[in-house]
Length: 123
Ligand SMILES: [Zn+2]
Ligand SMILES: [Zn+2]
Image (cartoon, rainbow, N blue to C red; front, top):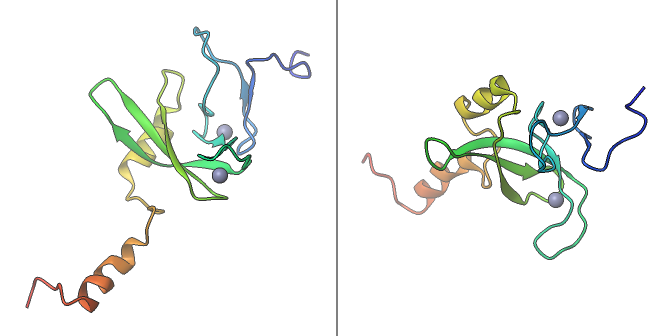
């Protein structure tokens, strides 16, 4: 009972299947509190994307303001979403502590490029 009839502010995660609503706030959920992913509805140009925005890092704006950095698996666009009280803290910490595994540019090639350009510092 209950789950068949999704409320307007209900969130259904396409990534992990979590279903629920926001607790204590009127704000609709911007991302899944369980896996921190969301669906990329529209890109900067307003074109529908539909890809999964997966969490790639945590951006600490200030002591009280944490934002989750998400990257679209489909188009690669990055965006941030404010962290909420409901968010899975273990998941947040695992993202915050792990080295960024999918940066917006290939980090492993940065050194290579530097060498190619003669910018090596340890000569
Ligand atoms: Zn999820
Ligand atoms: Zn996208």
